[in-house]
Length: 180
Image 1 (cartoon, rainbow, N blue to C red):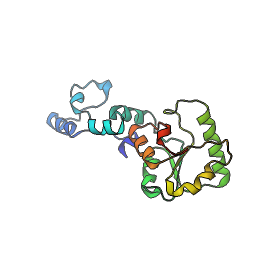
Image 2: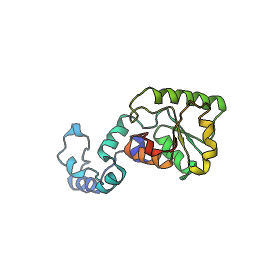
Image 3: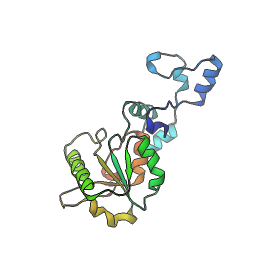
Image 4: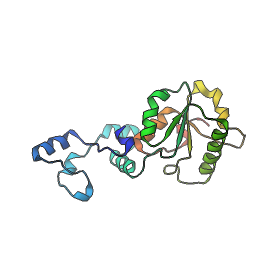
């Protein structure tokens, strides 16, 4: 939640210990040039390797722009984690979490999303206005996201959203799709 918000400083236990020893809060801003800052960075090499991200880069991207700003995330009913669990993460990242939309609004979001996807814009930096998160149990619903045969609306597993929030980047690669 802290990372997704882009507003909360994520610090290590070393930061707290050094700050208490110095009797001041150590600035983690590179522009402040505090020599203790390097010793206090949050690092998690195991997670970075497993999830293919760099925490420091994710923190920086989150500060610059919330990942899901102006994005509607449609979560189908059987997705796990559920919409109830995902909603706070989606909202703190700037998105809107929904499980239904009026047909006209859904079609408008699909149309706008397909334009973004076809534009060739960098997939990691430009998100379409609609992300569909689903699971195989809800595959009967997928046709509603593809009203025409030439409409290719990607459908992602919840893991894509969760790792995207961790990376602060949704890669939109074929291996991350469940409904293609």
